[in-house]
Length: 187
Image 1 (cartoon, rainbow, N blue to C red):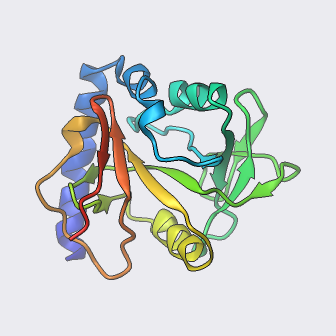
Image 2 (image 1 turned 120 degrees about the horizontal axis):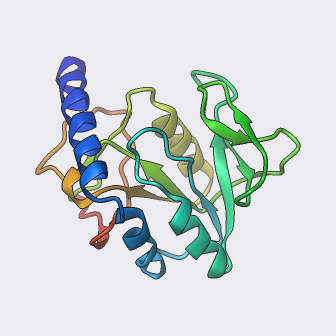
C-alpha cells in the first residue's frame, strides 16, 4: 500500500499546486467559515509550506474570536510533535523538520483543536499527508490522554472518493475548505 500512497502523493501534490494557483483567494474564503469550526480554546495551526492552504487569514479570524493559537514543533524525528504558544508576528525558527516554529522560550501547550495540512481527504475523515507520520504520531498520542479534534484544512478539490488507510493513520473529525466545513462521516 505504501507504493500506492507514494504515487497518490505525487498526483495530489500536483493537483494541490494547481488548486492553489487557480484560487489565490481560497485562504480568505476559508477564514470566512471560521465560526463553523467545532469549539476549541487552544487551537493548533501551522505555517503553510509550498502549496498548502495558507492558514494566516484563518489564524487572524480565530484570534478575533478569542482563541489562543499554537504551532507544532518537531523536536525528534520519530516522535510526536509538541505545540508552542504562538501569535502572528512572534519570532520563528526552523524546527528539526525545517518548518517555521516558535522559539523554545514559548510556552508548551496541549491543543484541543488541531488544524492539519493535507494532500487529500475523503468524507470519512481519512487524510493523506506528506508521509512523515508527524501528525499521525502526534494525534495518536494526544487522543490517548485528552479529547482533541483534528480538522483538515484543504481546498475543496482535494477531496477523493476513498483514500487508502493503514492501521496507524489518524482520521480527521472534519475538513474546512473554502466552500465550508465538512464533518467526517465515520464508517
